[in-house]
Length: 140
Image (tube, rainbow, N blue to C red; front, side, top):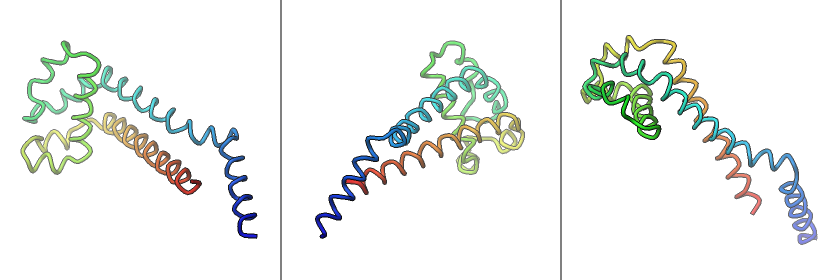
């Protein structure tokens, strides 16, 4: 009886993983990650200069505006990731002297909102991937 129950559970699992909902469950993290990368590219091309201007008194970002026109897409995304990381945890940057507290307070709300959207999107990608990974581990 126990082996019959195991066969039924395995059969159901195999049927599920060969269905369209399972395909959607597995493809969604990939699509969300692609969307996140595209959004990072957009922010690095469209709003990075404005972010750097808003943080011009911070020692960490001093001189980055001058280098910006000569950077390729990858370097711009790395610059954006640095700005995003500093704005995600500004207290650590202020304590270490990388960020000016005035720059953090005066950072434009519209740009803060865009960074919040990006952080939320990345959180959803990580959460969804963890859920899919857990389902796959439970099935095997």
